[in-house]
Length: 246
Ligand SMILES: [Zn+2]
Ligand SMILES: [Zn+2]
Image 1 (cartoon, rainbow, N blue to C red):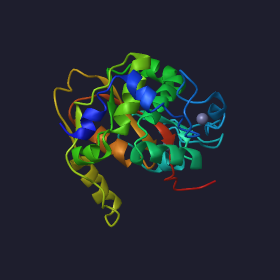
Image 2: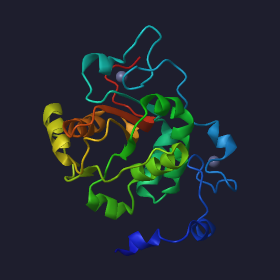
Image 3: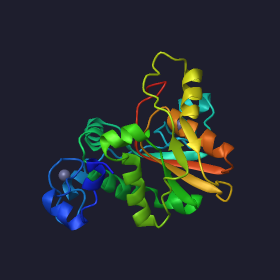
Image 4: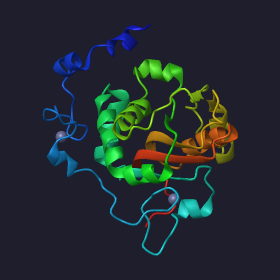
C-alpha cells in the first residue's frame, strides 16, 4: 500500500482536527458541522430555467430537448447536472481534482442528494456507479473524485455505491486529434464492465461534470452491453459543449 493510500486511513475526527473541512465555494474552513457556508450556498450557480428532458441542460421555454440532444442520440436514458459550470464551480472542481480537496466531493454529494431526491425516487436505481479513473491517475491523485461524490450521496440516500462494476482500463488523455467517432470508440474501449450486471435493472452514473456527454455515453454503452436496462446519470455541474449558444 502506498503512503498516499494510508494517509486516508486516519479516523475522521483526527483528520478534521488536522485539516478542517473547507467550503468548496470560498475555500475557508466551513462552520462547524457544515460542509458549505450558508452564505456560500447563495452563490451556487442554480439553474432556474426549463431543462432538456434528456440531459438536463438549460433550454428555452418552447423547447423540449436541447439542440445537442435534438441532433444526436445519447446512449443513456436521461440525467441531470445540478449547477452551471461557472467560474466558481470551475475553481471548486479543479481544486477537488488537482489540489487534494477531497472534502469538496463530500459537500457535492450532499448537494446532489438535496437536488436530485425526486429523480432518485423515480428512477429507483439498484446502485450508483462512479465514473472510474484510470488506476494510474487515481494513484497519482490519491482518490477518484467521482467515487467520493457517489459515496457521500449513498450515505444520504441509502442507495449503494458500486465501484467494482465499471473499470477504466485505458487512459484517454490525448484524443484531441481524433474524429468524434474515433474518440467515442476509444472511450468505449477505455471502459470495461466486470462482475455480473444481469441482476441489475437500473443504475445511476455519477460524475463531477457533464459536458458533451461522451464519457457518460461510453460508460452507458459498456453497461448496456453487459445487460443493464436503465442507465441514468447525475453530475454536479453541466459544462460547456453546447453546439448552439443563445
Ligand atoms: Zn464558504
Ligand atoms: Zn440535452
